[in-house]
Image 1 (cartoon, rainbow, N blue to C red):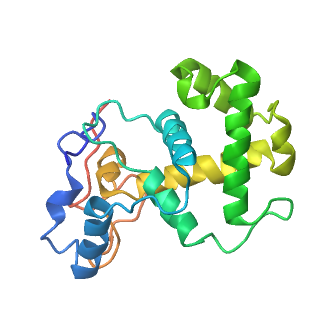
Image 2: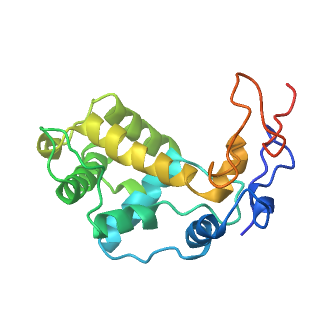
Length: 203
């Protein structure tokens, strides 16, 4: 799996720290799982999986990665384990039910707007549909069971971004040096960095 080297941090490779004091055995074990042990589909139906894959490709496009960072498998694992954040909005259903209802409503939204499935729409149509959900301008009656904007923002988008940026290969994009343990960060002042942190390119 090749890393993505954005222009903002040219040449930076966080995984080069694998055998350095920046990572210990616990950190390496967690990173190895994220890199090499992608969970199989266990909760979502095949249709739900394909729909969520299409949505994630629009939320976090990865056109220059030979092997995109997997997002859908980790959402599926979260749902399989019924592992939420420990709270839910009072007007939203429980975690698993919320995802089932939200994905079904999203699928129906595509049918209402275009008369065909979300996965068959072109990129611009998919983006417009997702933007409508973000603006709470949904048309499908199935959204009566789950709030469209809240599902999009607090479930779809938040989950996708959280999983993406928890992946080591995404850290190069933001210059993240990895967990503070065991090495720790010393220079915490504004616009300062430790020697082992990424150096941002001059603009």
